Structures are given as structure tokens and as C-alpha cells.
Image (tube, rainbow, N blue to C red; front, side, top):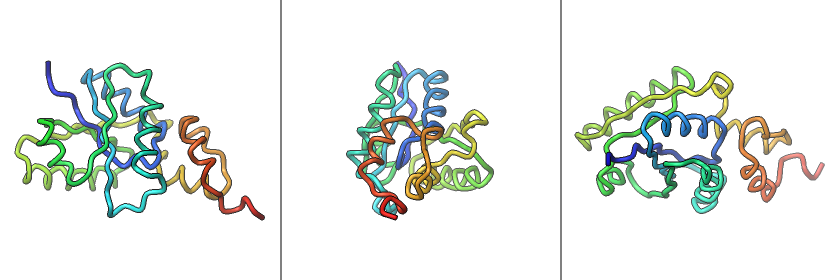
Length: 164
């Protein structure tokens, strides 16, 4: 049996765009680890436990998907688990520029490191976690962009205009 591919990120929160990439990766590779990062340099809205719980609920029906949290460098997580291949979603050219650079940095630290870039359906090209957070905070409906579980977690967070 081959190693699964790893789809890493903060997933703050998980969106339909992430789910779309995850479906594509599962179809291509069979087994995917959705690796949720606890990155202290990112000011996440949701705790690591909440992000893992949301992702598990969103993927429970998906064969071949495992959700795991990790801390520290991605390459250290990959090495520790003997993973070699990472899947990254590319929506726009700026995503590619950043991921391209990160691929070569990670490869310098881990020679077996490989990246596979996948593009989501056109419907999800503009969907991002930060956009979903902004829509929620400013009173908008996130239903077109994120699964229902995300709405339930957002219900615990006050919105900017809730008390006006």
C-alpha cells in the first residue's frame, strides 16, 4: 500500500473549496490526510480542536480521508510519518507564486518532498477561509461557501453588526 498524500493547511474554517480539492485528491490518490496546522504565526479564529472537529464532520462520509492535527514545520510532520507528497489547492496566480516558493524551501529541508497542485471547480475559485470569516463577521450568509458545520461553529462568535 502506498503512502497517503497530505493536504495541509490551517483550514480556519474549512470551506467548500477545501472540500472540492479534497475530493479531487481522494479520487486521484485514494488516501488523503487532511493535516490541520497549529501555526502560532497565524491568528486563527477557531481553535485547533474546533478546526479538527469541523473537518472531521465534513469528511466523515469520505472514504480514504483521515484528519490529523500537527504542530511545527510541515516537513517535520511529513518525515515523522514517512509521508512524501503534499497536495495544494491553487485558486489564483498569487497562490501559485507562494506555493512554488514553499515547495523549493521544503524540498531543501526534505529531499523526498513533492507537491501536487490541484485547481478547484470554477465555482470555488474565489472561496477562501478569510473571505468566509469576513462574510460572517460582517453579517453575511456563508452558506454558499462553507458546510453547515462551519455555520454552527460561527454561531458561537459574535458578528460585527449583531448588536446594532
